[in-house]
Length: 269
Length: 263
Image (cartoon, rainbow over all chains, first blue to last red; front, side, top):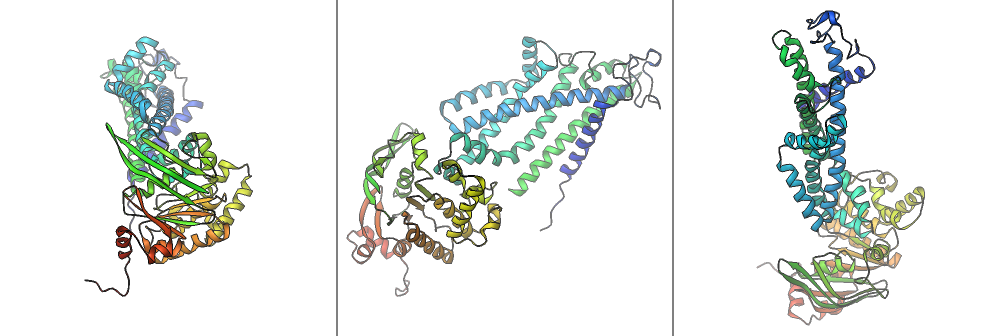
């Protein structure tokens, strides 16, 4: 049988890999200080000294994109981590034990999932106040239901498999069955949804910062830069374009990666 | 050794409940192989699950007694039950394709019950696992130890299951149609193996099947079940030569034979 090449996975991994490399580089080295103001070169077009030009305050856009993408990615990683860890715990418990706990937690899930996510995030931010940490908490909570439902479904499926029954018969405890016997079997599904979760998190963070309720100035973030660049879209199109394309590439990379993983795990099963 | 007294099992469904086992009693002595035979839905698997303590759930009501060496398994709580499971009772399921965890190495699955019930070190466990696999007549157990289930054939997986079930020297082995999913030659080998294990380790076997010809080859005694009740029970030879009930006669007539012509 000829194996079809999984282009989604290859291209997605390549884009994501390059972006992450650039961001990692940005953590140690940026051509300029991201917040360094050069009053003489406001809104300068791309040149040899400023690779992607400068913004309205004369800050180097390339350096700010590296820094901002780092912030965005950091928030996305934390959000997915919070959502996935809590969601998996919740899904595992409800899926494995079922009963009343299952009913209650899943209905709470439905309630959270019923709201548009940015709207609900706004409510959380209104309660908690803005800032990096609070964005992570607010978005993290919003990411729980998706992971919980997915994990629950997988646990319900695996629970009735005979290898779980036989583990039970050998006298394995509930927690051991969940962790050792079932959890690894949910990874194929979980991984692809984590990749797609990343891209949702990047998008959510960008839109919240765009609306001014996410990362606060002077910290750079892709969403904030996009909203700032809007006023100069005709006088300095490179500002909006470079930030916009960065967001698009980040998301594209994660989407392709997620799709590729999904295809891969589906093909092997 | 295992004594079932007046066991009733009912499942709750919706508002009412459906009784699937109506007061059965049987006994399995040390070193004995007892076959339970009956059609689908006759309650044989449910009885086996109850005997292994897997039926402890909210939607199942049980009454009667299941005594394993004078301890009533139905009275035990989850913690106490866990001590017997895997230690004193081993089980082999029908479908060797799904009864092994696809993401766990064979060795780890064989030694799982040692890990749960003993404080043996990793190398001691491996040693025991390999010797159990050797008892289950698996070739090259050292190599198989590190393989994954998908690399094994159905018959080999069933042997792995048997190795996992006997590793802790249980008193009772419950085999729930262990040969149904295998083809005939492998079936015969597995039956030989169970017989050998029974003789060498002295473990009692509760052998569940719908196939009387398989039971005849293996079992010392037979219990015939129908619709949750015991129709007839007795020594294998006695049942086969002198079936008293119509139902048993019908089951025996189901065994294909060379003499009869197909109509």
